[in-house]
Image (cartoon, rainbow, N blue to C red):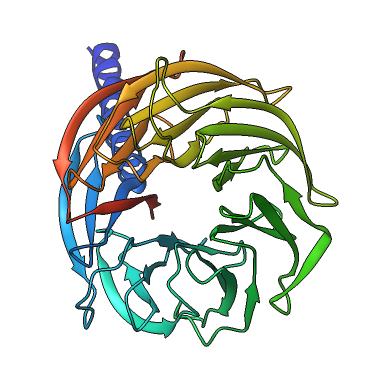
Length: 375
């Protein structure tokens, strides 16, 4: 009997330990599962607000907030957005007078936006971006033919422009290199990409040597994106629908074209009107949007050469000026300026092909999407 009692007694603590361990593991896994919540922010030009969505694991979008721009009455032609590297602040560019950058604090738990303050922009800016240190705001003016740099205060509000630099015609994008040593500006009307050396300590831009990279006449360079490995750049051209691949030399900031393909679907006829371009976080797939045909085109990226192989095109929202890819690389969300809605696609992890999941209403004239994992 004594032996049997010992055996029962020995099982009891083991069961208790197992139960406790299971509960602890469940708690830990629950904490980890809840640690990274994904949010999408959509800039709406005509309604002067930002639609905030929470995205579930399955790609479902749950509306959580409409954040309005206080004191802004007139619609602008678009609403560019940028998020600071520390994920604390979202900045929106207002393209109606008075031109300004509106800063919002991002709640790390709910993803909701709270106004912090505003700062002046040098003009109506088609594109805004934040340097890798989070201390400076870059902006490009399409109509003003200029780029600018504003310092950001500790709370993420833009100060007076520190530099305003004239460019060729129609500056459209103004983005830093992966290492923050250079900043590049597309000039859509002058068919060139300007390069600037960037001193992140002083916040100073100086023309690079050479100061510009020319692209084919009347191609209209618009948006570009760096490969996550920092060795390649991909540039979409608005006026002819070209997508060009370049090697990128980090030491000098030089671009060297290695391939030119198209964002236009097979059988295209008409006037091209290409818009946006993005790459998956793992660098395996690239996507481009085209507004005449209302399509998204997918490409497979060769990791060694950087060259593209076209996967195919899918129909999307009407006039898809903006889209983006979530931080996991599993979903793509595209917005339509003329449909006032956003469609989410699943990205096939093997082929890169897009599969439409569902559409969601947004504000009026949506044109920009930013994704963010919180906290």
